[in-house]
Amino acid sequence: MELTNMVGQVGFPVAVSLWLLIRLDKKLESFERAAAALAARLEEHSNRCLECRDYRRTHNNNSQCQCP
Image (cartoon, rainbow, N blue to C red; front, side, top):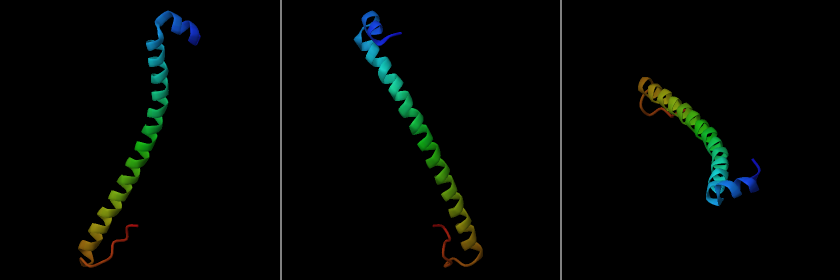
């Protein structure tokens, strides 16, 4: 459906709402990718810190953590 026909048939507010929803969908996809990458990095860091904690327990408490 052409934009000018859509505005004429359903009105300006509906056309603007649809346009914003389409743009928002693209932004949400980008946000989802960024959130998934952040969650993966946090999980990786958490696992490393747990390994450091276990290492300290078995090799004296004053050992240095190997986490970057």
